[in-house]
Image (spheres, rainbow, N blue to C red):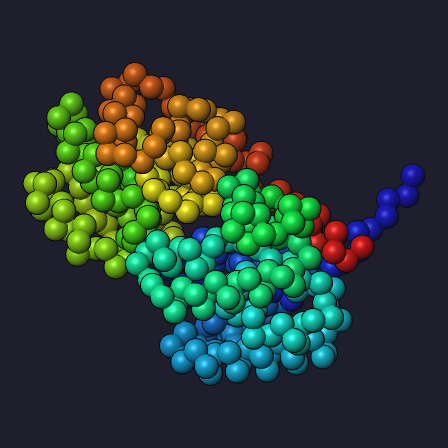
Length: 387
């Protein structure tokens, strides 16, 4: 039987930042990975992001920067409109893929004849409200989201939790929503190091149990509760150490909390950890933890940790349980309360709860979340709107 070659799909992707130039949140990581891996699944990628003149060359001439990072918003929007108009006029695209409503809303008229697929990375307005934003700013974000989502033929979400958000909060027809999990470059996180070797490389203590959390230092991430939980954990495990990797607006407040609780030797704020050292940090830890209190659709750090061979504990919030439940229910913490966090971490450190080992974690990620696997799932959704 003669095999039929897959039809190439030409996609126009609208992102935010270009990961090698940014510290890399979940959205930017996913956009960058799709730009790299979709072509191997038969999807051509042309994209637009904020960034420097080097983006075009560094992306293999797939992605253009429509404005530098510090450009005022109005000028960014104008440059993006011009770039999208030119692309639509000169390129024979099959679809537009949106990763951020703010940069899709101003170009809706230019892309009106093309099918729109929205990669829903989270409820923008609700996340802003959860982090303290109020009034007109939140209302404007909500207005922008709703108008973009009305135009979408398909949505790609990271979890059932985010599918529920679209249905309940945005009144999206469930038939338009597809679940495609986040992905990870499994080989990059497999360092080949032992825990001892990883700690030697980082200069971390060899004789202490170490827990790692990789989070933006912001509300809803649960870091305040996690620090308070360490106070309880150290009563049973005096040598415990929590490493917090990340930057953000809560740093000063977290420093004050650490000092007030006399945890200086037990909790360390590492700041931003470069991408090249992140796999080593995961590997150097006994386990990692995601203590989110609200609005977590997936949590890429969960699969990053497991790809490095390090089990991860997650709170029972949003899509987090969906990511790990098929590997081990013991990785799910019942809630995000201080006493619950402390009890679960203590049980793991005391050996009362057994987490999956390095091999089990890495095999689980390779079979389900490696980027070539995820890219093929994304292509399948794209095929629905171009067939």
